[in-house]
Image (cartoon, rainbow, N blue to C red; front, side, top):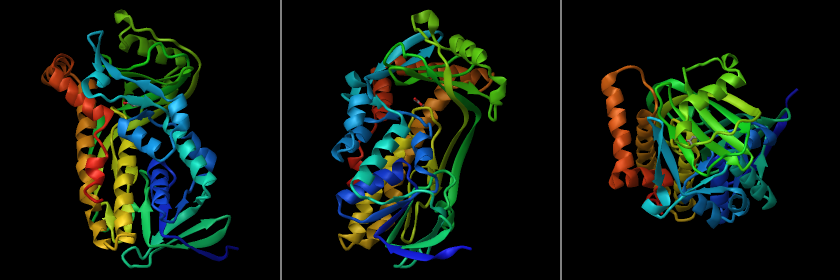
Length: 401
Ligand code: PHB
């Protein structure tokens, strides 16, 4: 039989312990705002979910300012740029030279581990395995979140609910009249982690007749690699041999690029899809990260964008709860959306510039022209570099601050 209701209270109930929810919990704690994070999975699951691994410059700066970057600064791999390969030739885009900023390669699950450890060490509550999470009364001044844990029913009374519960979000589904703008791409990515030392310290985005390939890494021992495949591709059709052969065919080996192979320790197929759901707020419920928008992985913006939302949300919540300006919650959607749509534009451009879409000669020549432009014009390369290295958070956070 289900146990009795246990009631608790906080200022902000955060649903989801991914990057958005965890960063939000730290930003709120830094403002002396009380919060509880509810997560439906267990700790090991969220700490081992393999996702992209590139941190924009503003993300790194934010984590540093919160005192959360010790391990990131020790173990993260600083990259000064990326390489674009086409016709078998590599072209460097040097972010540091073009913008003065660089990026850091550090797996999303490492960020998540650091944020969880620091939050728990500071005594901040994270409730793992909280299932059937249901926000109630978010259009009133007294919302609450119901959930179940260990067969006991719980109620968390709060003032604000932060829906950071990912792409299958329960919270987002509670926003009435939500409109979704989306684009599906006619391909997916087959991603692997291999126990093989990276051979260089820059990512390679390779456009190839046979389809796109990406060379990335996680550590001095682990390489991360991706291949463009059909949507819903069957992993079983890809032996280790076939994966390595295809990577070798698409990556610019003839241009001096070396590929180390090794045991494949993780593999999966990820669909490519863009979506933006609006509004991102209903009453006292605010939505952030994948719960509100998805970007295709080309450009590795998902986690960075989720964290940018969290900065806007923290400022709006502080205004509402401490500044006596609850009406500022109404600006949350529009403030987030300017960054969201710029990021969508960037991720869409990177995706359409680099993938094989079919045989349409017009589209292929446009792709080629775009690659030529971005690798020969300093203005075009700087535009890509600025967006890849990350536009400052402050410009966006300021407007609610
Ligand atoms: C990754 O390392 O997982 C990664 C890097 C760059 C991307 C996407 C994924 O654009």
